[in-house]
Length: 532
Image (tube, rainbow, N blue to C red; front, top):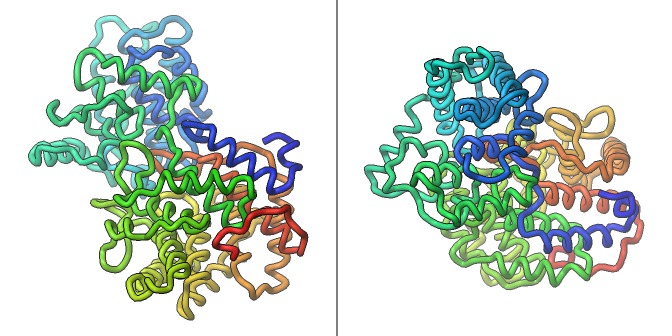
């Protein structure tokens, strides 16, 4: 973010952000090492490989690992990086200094894998139970083939022993999953996004067809092309090339992310206030994204309760009459499954659903007989998920501050005495965990997590002097770090990622709330339903 934008008013910055997102057909995320390495391995025919090789080599950390976040999060990207480097060496894609660097990268990556804690627990990232054993098997296969070569691939170099399967994973899971769906005669959509994990096990008849990215994933798409036929379809090459052009030759884990990005940005800004100039654009987003059959986060993914709830909520915030009926698809009697057939639930999806249901009832009190009992059950379910010390966890985010902020927002506006006690516990935990520099963060202070924590504290009207001091320190931290640009990856997909525009919207909105708590007048805006 430029200094000019940082010094602009909230309304100017918010309007600029909405306009920028409206013009971006892909979304604001960084390339993924995991995903790019999978494309390197499966798609040697894709133009632009030298840039991906450079990216692979440059992204390796000093300790030999790949990926972002703490060491446990580095397991999957490091497996992916090692396997991709072995694939390049095995097929003779490079020579000279580049080949030597790749060999060194393999050695360092294998050493990093051996240094990881073997017992777990491991992060609950997407399909890790399939992707990890699949990659361990691929690495062992690559090493065995390289060791059997009569001529070493690089100056007498041979790779060392392959990694052990970390504790908590089962080597038979990819084959088991493939066999299960082969017997059923169909592959569910929920496996499309992580198809690369079962690509070597699934019968060819079950490989999904189509010209677009499979499950919005470049890795899944490249794996489909590699297993479906000897030569990739022209449409597949074109689809991957288009994404690569947007990300300087590399690939994110999902493309595009427009649904998620637009809904989360709109909700963040509307929770403060939407600039008048942005209201028509956001209304257009909400109208386009709302679907009575349920909303999917990206093309090729399953419909899910999280995106569906946010589409209902944003529609309500900008005055559109879209009903919560699509959420009925995901209700399980007490709360909402994030998507049909999921293994672990999402607390934040249910917090968003509570906001969507309660907001709709506020606008349409005649529906309380229909949605009221469901709202009460959902509120109680959320309260029951709180950890004793105060926070809530979630499957989609590594930091408890995200889920806690979402739950506090929902329960503060639509709670009860029971919910008020839960909010009070969350506020106390937030106060207790502020860092010395005024920030908050699960691994270190970040602007994103500080925005969530400040929102938790702003949710309560009973502010003690300690509250005021905490908010003052948070405001100073956020103002001092405004415009820094790079946000640590905290969101869960296959690995960690950072949705930049969404984080920018959250920080921008909270900075305005912190500023206006002093009684300063903001710029002229159009009030949303949440403010009326």
